Length: 353
Image: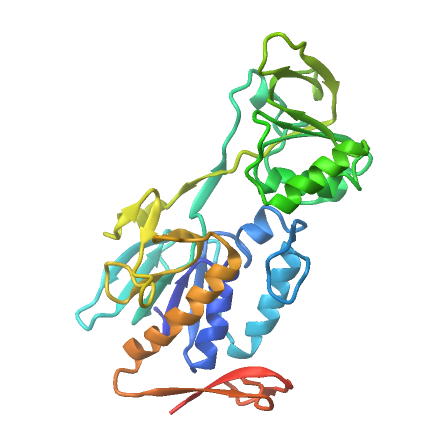
């Protein structure tokens, strides 16, 4: 039995940052993740994708963000159960919980925090003939290493942030980048939309709007595709390509967590955002993309905020007879559990009374 103060389901950015916030309160954390390494989607799906909305970082690669978070939490010595999925939640007589994984590993904690991002997920695939035939032979659904596309011809389909961001990024990597979207308006950030249109004007991106990829062609590997305009009067375009990357988002599934008796709305866990991000089960919290409430923004920085607030209330559950005083200092640094200090001129330190 692994015992800890806070058991975190999910080792993505929000789960990792929870370790830091809990560590400042002298609370020990253990994390469970079905993936074999920390970072969640940032490590598994798009480690080389640039992220632009992390405070103090005008731009940071997803994989580098995970590395920084791991460095930040190192003084607090978290435990990890990797490669295992949280399967069951059992409430004990004293109000604590036992979470058992699909491999039988048992974890005991007074507080459980679900920070599982989108949960288990799979890409949304377009309904195209032969698409399964070309999977991993020119058709891919996730970009992990942009260098794979160096000097190649790439067609990206989609109208959200991922499609726009990757089209912009690969315009400096690939020999040719085409972006196909079924509408004229994009769903992504305005800056990205403007940048993509600017690149299209100077010929660095071929932009096909109000159109869809209709056919895939090739022998053993993908060689070309047909782009069909939505308007019948316009002729289809035959485009040679090495890769077709449909980025239509992920189809999220909560998996076994959906059977824990939590209040679910549109495949997300409802929480009390007016106070502490607690679920309908006292002692079980949900933070990050996995939760939902009015006005929810699915951003990494939102998950960071929710983690900070949640930890304050988790402390009260774990230490009902103690009080804490939050202090701000410019010289204290961050003290790990072993008594060592990371010196810093400007750090926020929370002192326990």
